[in-house]
Length: 364
Image (cartoon, rainbow, N blue to C red; front, side, top):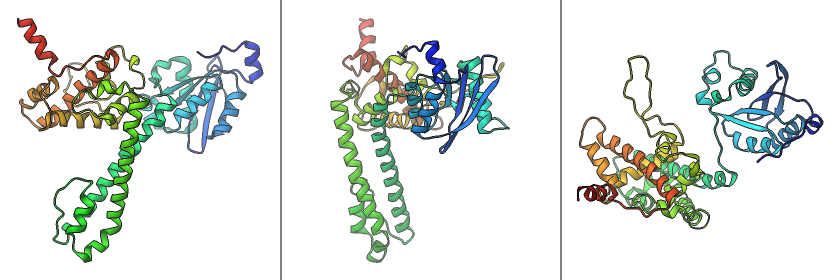
């Protein structure tokens, strides 16, 4: 809990504001402060650097400060909280009066944040940032993902290059691609793509280092991930990413809320009598959603074992229609997100065919 600050201490800290909005930029950030009557009584620019922001935060009495979520918002929210302020991190996608404004400016955005924080903070759709340690550990997973995507692009480049000259690199694993390409591509063309193949080798080594670090983090710092990896198709990478993205399992009243949090539930655009069926909302963390869908494909694939998740996906795939397999994988991913949260909270042993056993028991 924050330490309460007495009135005399507030006065010593400088001006007293009812609320403040801070529009964050890479170099400079604009702030607008309101008084109790809702009148703008202060506005300035401050450098978006820790020393300058801390000096500004300590120069005013503790107040409510609203900022938009973005690259800088995690460290800025922590810094201003340490200065004694109550920081609201707004979801920019859910504040159309700012994101879709036709007269947008830094000063207008800052004032709008201050007014929403003062009069109706629920309209800011507050976001809770994960802890600093969790953020650092999550960057390991994001860095690995960046290396994987870079390697995939380079492999595609090499394949397209050799195809244009009537050659072909046979299908193989990504780790073996560079050596297979060197043995297949003719000398003249090999000379051109050799630097790219060397870059692919370097990325493969980097990805291997990241994999080892992720395994170590899962074993040492996040041992509860072992409850999640009970599910066949969920490895240390997916389990650790899941725990770091959610950060605190107790944030969700029920496990079913996790599917919507990760954007795996259908979006809705109901108006009057019209309520069209739409695809998933795709809100939340993209990487986590992609990892869960990949797990869904594995569960439904040739290496997946018989389980409730697989049977659920197969039942959806049998309905046919456009993109039936893709819809089935997304449905399995949604169920998996709920299941992982349940295992994390309860620390129960995973029973792959729990639903089937329950049905048989009731029938008996």
